[in-house]
Image (cartoon, rainbow, N blue to C red; front, top):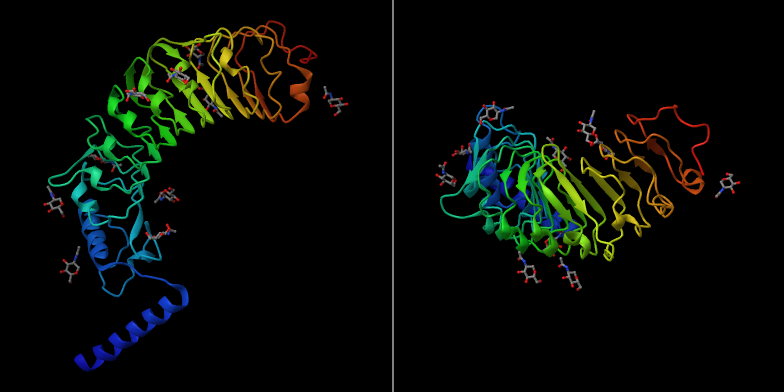
Length: 340
Ligand SMILES: *[C@@H]1O[C@H](CO)[C@@H](O)[C@H](O)[C@H]1NC(C)=O
Ligand SMILES: *[C@@H]1O[C@H](CO)[C@@H](O)[C@H](O)[C@H]1NC(C)=O
Ligand SMILES: *[C@@H]1O[C@H](CO)[C@@H](O)[C@H](O)[C@H]1NC(C)=O
Ligand SMILES: *[C@@H]1O[C@H](CO)[C@@H](O)[C@H](O)[C@H]1NC(C)=O
Ligand SMILES: *[C@@H]1O[C@H](CO)[C@@H](O)[C@H](O)[C@H]1NC(C)=O
Ligand SMILES: *[C@@H]1O[C@H](CO)[C@@H](O)[C@H](O)[C@H]1NC(C)=O
Ligand SMILES: *[C@@H]1O[C@H](CO)[C@@H](O)[C@H](O)[C@H]1NC(C)=O
Ligand SMILES: *[C@@H]1O[C@H](CO)[C@@H](O)[C@H](O)[C@H]1NC(C)=O
Ligand SMILES: *[C@@H]1O[C@H](CO)[C@@H](O)[C@H](O)[C@H]1NC(C)=O
Ligand SMILES: *[C@@H]1O[C@H](CO)[C@@H](O)[C@H](O)[C@H]1NC(C)=O
């Protein structure tokens, strides 16, 4: 037994040394390999991931695992679509992965997490956290401590109540998606402090009252903004003097009771997609609307109250690819010419 294992040991070492010299490639760290096996055993008693319990197996090559090939440490875990039967994730099981940057738990089917020893904050290198498609109706402990987060996806997760005030400390966030939850109350004022935001979706929640454009006006990097509510009454406040610092490429404002287009869109010269469906627009107004968007590709105005439509010729001449004006109140059908 020993006679055979010794040459094999040397051979393996030789291969590792050679490949390190050739590519600088480091394979999986033993502590992390064990950690992955423990995690697998915990979340998947019935249908485990195909991760062999074999010391010769390089866990950096495993499905759902991503390593930094210079250091050999696990930097990405893609546990999405696992549908675990364990409703509460034991966070201690993530503790071996100190260099973790991406944690994808989309449709992990978790109701939350617990931690006997550590907290989520110990994953302090985490940059991307996807918790979408879970059932997180309880509190969200520890999230605010992840100060290095760049992307946080909490969409479709049955979260109830107010956005925790401490989210204002996540100042490095570039992407925040909290769409399709049951967030309620007035629109969260803390978003005005998230100055790195490029993508913000508050859509399909239960925010009510007045949404002041001031809340986002200073977010100079913002490119995509989405807001809608299905269940409550939301109105967009539209101050004349306000000059936002952003140039959006996508705006979606659905179910916002809009009778005219909000003024803050006047100087948005880079818009590619406008979705103002399910509002109460009766005509293309004010007059600047659509005149200023040379790059517009998609314009969605379905389910409004238009009785007639005339678009600037310039608009239809240019980059426009999709125009949806279905479910309006045209009494004469579409006019022969829809341009002015
Ligand atoms: C992996 O195999 C070792 C040795 O056979 C065993 O002690 C350990 O419990 C196994 N780990 C898992 C998670 O199954
Ligand atoms: C791998 O880790 C090293 C050391 O932490 C870091 O400098 C490097 O940028 C990482 N590589 C990648 C691709 O993230
Ligand atoms: C998990 O999500 C990543 C994208 O982040 C995707 O590439 C991958 O296919 C998904 N895996 C599963 C099992 O759905
Ligand atoms: C999700 O978890 C619950 C237990 O919390 C379980 O009853 C249900 O079957 C799981 N869903 C799927 C699709 O596995
Ligand atoms: C959570 O995981 C840690 C580390 O593996 C373990 O020590 C602890 O017993 C686990 N807790 C529960 C309740 O499973
Ligand atoms: C937002 O930032 C301002 C100044 O930058 C600070 O005074 C305020 O406390 C912050 N708000 C929150 C909710 O953290
Ligand atoms: C936006 O910036 C202006 C000028 O710096 C400042 O007066 C205003 O209070 C800021 N608004 C918010 C909501 O932070
Ligand atoms: C536009 O809004 C409608 C209605 O809310 C929605 O169904 C559709 O997915 C949106 N489309 C795009 C491209 O944003
Ligand atoms: C059309 O929009 C109104 C809000 O303006 C909404 O109440 C209604 O459900 C929408 N209809 C459809 C078919 O989506
Ligand atoms: C629209 O396009 C036509 C031909 O493609 C061109 O003759 C006309 O000058 C264009 N009009 C405008 C307003 O750009």
